[in-house]
Image 1 (cartoon, rainbow, N blue to C red):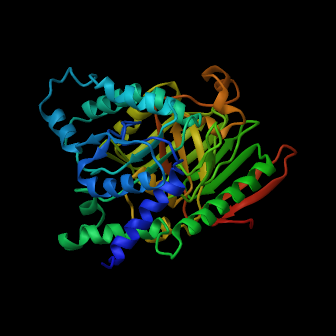
Image 2 (image 1 turned 180 degrees about the vertical axis):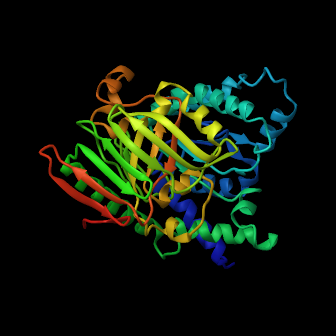
Length: 422
């Protein structure tokens, strides 16, 4: 029996997911699809892909693989028919199971794939309430993951509604194949040795992170049409790219695809104005052409041509929601950027351009951050929040400079591309 090209590429995808993304260890257990930060579980329609991943996991030595399933249509039905005062209810067993899996050191795979228009006609207040409830209940698990308690990764795959959103002009019968082919491209899978190619790619991102860590910049300056932003960096910040290491020494790649190197800003030291270069899809609402003005680390003004009310509600989630938790650099020449597509999916879109994130800073972006309490993390400049929402600000017109402690200014990017070799 000969495999089709599609089957070969899908097998490569599962190989990269298990061996590079998760770096699943012999004897380790794997949880697929627990609820986390607004994601509810594994889409039922992706069962064929999940079966391939589970097979691969057992082949590399997993002791047990469990899957927490989800049907997004059930969320739609709930919003249409459930009592309006019931949206702070949550199936606590799901959050508890995820927390216990992470605490026990099980690997975690999240499949972030949803129809971005599924809830667009629903009451935005109720949608926001559902999202916030999810985040409140899953925050303890997210906190453990940001402290590198175990190896984890986030991937994606085409689902109903999403493929139609991305490729509306294609005949219905060809959209799925086109979407999969696009994923194979942006995930760098069309090589003879995708695992080796991915390890080389990760090593390149790590090398860029190491370069920036050696520089110890105190401030980043990002300039482009509509953007003039100074992002202060705390002492002890750590640039990451492609690879994170768990507290017990397992290297893993949190996102597939990934093109970024990133670190945490100081929560009180962002100044200036920044304009989005891609829409933000959040909870079924599209926020477009928005501009944020920062003073002393906090958003003091927010405007948007579309979705401004939702943007304001997002910023009001909690005290940390109006401050930054991440600044990330991505070359304009990245495969995702060059695809020319807007995916309405944070995992993919954030790897198309430079971006920043409102909300929680990732503890592993600070020296010894994994072992700090929340108060200790805040004292060194780390932001805490229920949310961590990435949005895109980069383009082929953005310049980025790094300021050193002695006032020296060095170019990091010009016209969206790296100014240093590694």
